[in-house]
Amino acid sequence: MYTASEKKRDNIAEYILYMWQIEDLIRAYGLDMDKIDAEIISRYTDLTDAQKRELHEWYESLIDMMRREDVVQKGHLQINKNVIIALDDLHRRLLADEKFSAYAAEFYKTLPYIVELRAKAGEEKAGEIETCLNALYMILMLRMKGQEISKETSEALGQISRFMAMLSHYYKKDYNNQLFTDSGDDM
Image (cartoon, rainbow, N blue to C red; front, top):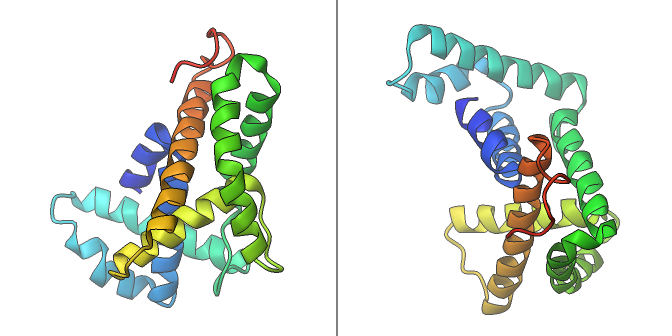
């Protein structure tokens, strides 16, 4: 919860990846709040009892949402989908505004990788931004498992990461009402 708040404020792409990890973590514990208390929350020795209660309530609310939204087995919470919708909207606005030509250039460098990933996705095609996030999440999971990543995949990941970092930067500026008041690309 505390990490999520920090990531949401500082880097929206990292926030989404973190929240997807939390969804998977909750699934790994079978949506069992007792297990989450014992295995996760209890390990936060630096938190006060009030903070641990708050963290417990956060996990409990996520579990409740996962059940109500029927994403117990797979899928993502609507709160996370809403962030992706906002990122898609910002992405379109940036591409449409000639002040953000560096953003457009970065996107068009990334587009071949997005097209390739979407071709491999089969029936479960996602939008451009979600495709990038899915790729970053897949690589994160592979790294956590200690699996080797090819040179080609690393190159694609580097480009996708640069693009998503730029979009996250503009998201933060837009959130703070500073994006379209500036002169444009400032990365």
